[in-house]
Image 1 (tube, rainbow, N blue to C red):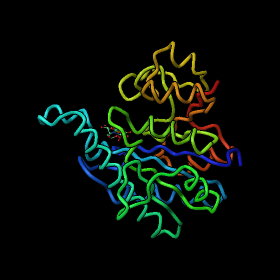
Image 2: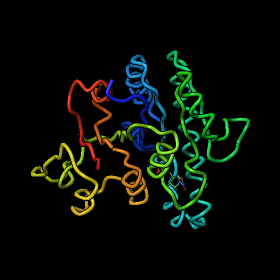
Image 3: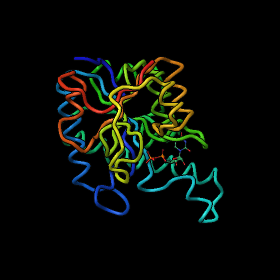
Image 4: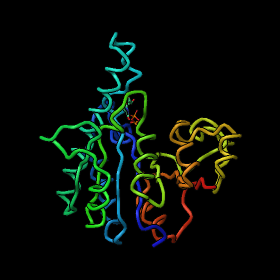
Amino acid sequence: MKYKRILLKLSGEALMGEKQYGIDPIRLDKYTQEIKGVKATGVEIAIVIGGGNIFRGVQAENLTIDRVQGDYMGMLATVINGMALQSALEKSGMYTRLMSGINMEQVCEPFIRRRAVRHLEKGRIVIFGAGIGNPYFTTDSTASLRAVEIEADVVMKGTRVNGVYSADPEIDPEAIRYDRLSFEEAYSKGLNIMDLTAFTLCQENDLPIIVFDMNKPGNLLKIINGSMEVGTIIAN
Ligand code: UDP
């Protein structure tokens, strides 16, 4: 296998599937099968899931909710998604732990780095919920930070397009896809890969990012076993 320990970032929005809000059971099941295929190879898997399908902090302003309050609502949304994913993975025979950046013992474990690493070593899939536990951050930043903390080999950002393009491929048919970019190139071209906090954390810690299409069956496994170049890799 090309990687021993990965951090998979899934957006909350992706979990909506064809729906306008919430969790689409079909999409959840598809993701479960993709993750199961990779787990079978023995790779250690940590997952950060977003909350955009339920609530985003920036939405708060339109609802006359204080931004910080809104961010906490967003973090709680990621726990709801994490619980759904945990349940789906366990129903499919995988062992999991949900760890939260905000303490809520009745629901999940608190995030303790050493314990997270131990779970991974024991073959459990670790889902990191509630972001990093602080407002004004995103789940992309959570993915970068947790990946650095647990010494993952790579952050794999599952999206609905197959990598990083020069323009939005869903709008511009001329957009070209990059196979590989350095952090410097991605930054100087103004490519929107992750928010800058998340991006810089990866760059400074020499942690590669792979952006790939999570909705295409088998993609995740192809990247892990190195059988095919999929998506775009951003590395120093
Ligand atoms: N959030 C936060 N701190 C964190 C992670 C997330 O405040 O460390 C909040 C923020 O309001 C964000 C929301 O949780 O908008 C949901 O996360 P995100 O927007 O990253 O989800 P995604 O876009 O991946 O679905």
